[in-house]
Length: 353
Image 1 (cartoon, rainbow, N blue to C red):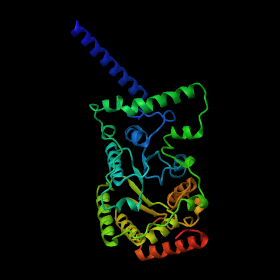
Image 2 (cartoon, one colour; image 1 turned 60 degrees about the vertical axis):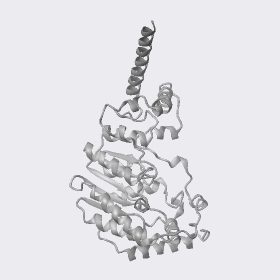
Image 3 (cartoon, one colour; image 1 turned 90 degrees about the vertical axis):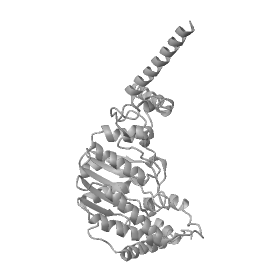
Image 4 (cartoon, helix red, strand yellow; image 1 turned 120 degrees about the horizontal axis):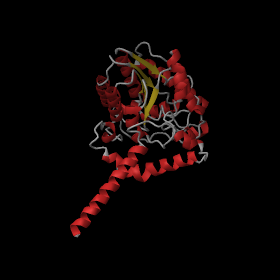
């Protein structure tokens, strides 16, 4: 009797597990098996692997929060192609390398737009933060149980996704913030979460702490080494690459100058631009001395800019404005940046020192 009861219990557990797997497979909130746009609440850490494998694209836009407000419809209109935005906030170099490797393995992308944040290459300890689970990136079915029976799958996403689907079927109008969070094009778009403008930007600014040590020579050497390693892993023979330095405001460079690392970061940029220009099928854009970086109405803090700036950058990719055509000397970058910092401080004398 006890054996029969145990067998029935095991059969019931197995049936429940199989039912859960079937349900998760059909709902597929992480898009591991199929793509369904504007249906589920998206989380870049969890849906990006599935999008890389299953989305219809030939172009990828890769980067941090600097690219998250990019209007992908406008991208198609201006630059053409079938683009996919690959992003997560504060993305690490390890994550960029890992995702790029998977994109190349899948083999759909012919055009790469890659945002280069200088700080990614600077830390003394290698930034190996990796928030993209391997079991979602690989193509093995053996570990899919981690997804189909996962805690976040069942406790977070399936309930929310089914609720959102039910609301849509009932004709319930959802707030724009929710509909944006369900769009693949708007993945991680944060424009609705912040106020842009000089007042907001200056309210979040404080000068760097005093007394911190910084070794310019060691930092620059480290940044160059890591950059060389990074580009050595890219296949410039297959695909066209557009790298760009995002338009941090001149207030950022004021901070960097007071912190003592501005010249090091500019020297690294000069080095990186020179190395990239030696590569085949590569374009480099430098937006960090753009004419709008001294106007804090374009920003929410000293680095993050309004969606309109993302739109302007798309236009520049098309018309070649801010395209780097020859290596720039570090000294020239310093002179340009110092002039814009001076202009900023004249414009906003209330900047704290």
